[in-house]
Structure formats: C-alpha cells, structure tokens
Length: 198
Image (cartoon, rainbow, N blue to C red; front, side, top):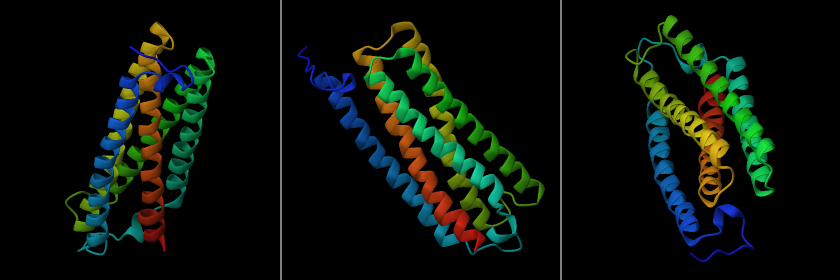
C-alpha cells in the first residue's frame, strides 16, 4: 500500500481517501433526507388544527441552550482533529470527550423540550404542524444519538490503538458527520424556531 506522507494521516492511503469521498456522497443523501423533512415542515407549519401554534409552544431559552451546546461541540471536534493531526493523543481524546458531553447535553435539553410539549398537549397526533415538527426534530435527535454511540466506540478504539491510518480516518469522518449535524441545526434554529417565534 502506497502512502503519501505529505498528507494528513486520515488521507494518507488511497483507501482512506476513498472512504472520505464515499462519506461525502453519504452526506449528500442525508442532505436530501433533511431537505425533504424541511419541505414537509414548511408545507404543514400553519396546519395547526385545534392544537397550539409554533408561537404558543416555542421558548427561546431551551433553543439557545441547544444551539450553544451543539455549536460549541462543533468547535471542540475541530480542536480534536487538529490535536490528532499534531499527534497529541491525550488532548485529542479530551476534546473528543468534551464534544460528546456537549452532544449529550444537547440531547438532554431536547428531550426535556419534547416532554414539555407533550405535557402542554402538543403531541405527534395533535396536528399536521406538530407531527412534521416532531419528525424533523426527532430525526436530527436520532442522528445526534447515533453520533454519540459512534463517537463513544471510536474513543475506545483510539485509547486501545492510538492514531493509525484507520482510527485517524474514522475520526475525521466522524468530525464531518458532527459538523453536518451542526449545519442542520443552524437551519432548524433559523427557519423553524426563529420563524415560529416571530
């Protein structure tokens, strides 16, 4: 296997470059998925029936906390990848763990938000607006949950094996996934929550 030592570790083999390229294609499919969910939401967001509207149930406090947690986690995963490229295992793992803790915090706030909606009578069955909202937010939340499980498994592998072509490649691909979730959240924050609060 021919290695190009001028490239970052995660790109040094042809197989690693192909994996990264393949993951970009996967993210393209994910963009289509979320674009479809956004289209459904924007079609149904005024269809509240007898249920509450976005303005009645959205609260800016939890949304700002979620946004802060997720955007900060995007910064820390970037620091983790930078530390990996410098060969600094301990700082990389610390930034990676911080990323996962922030993601877990985001998920906790989102679950509390869902519980609050349900106690206020805003459920999946209440209206077309709420069903499209829960599916959009739930799909993003499911992706964050998957990321937490994936990241946890990756941390164990890095602790055992250190930085190899394989672990570096997986870590970089994970960072792409995590940044993608942050970008999707920016769209949710801007076009779902802020629009709904106006």
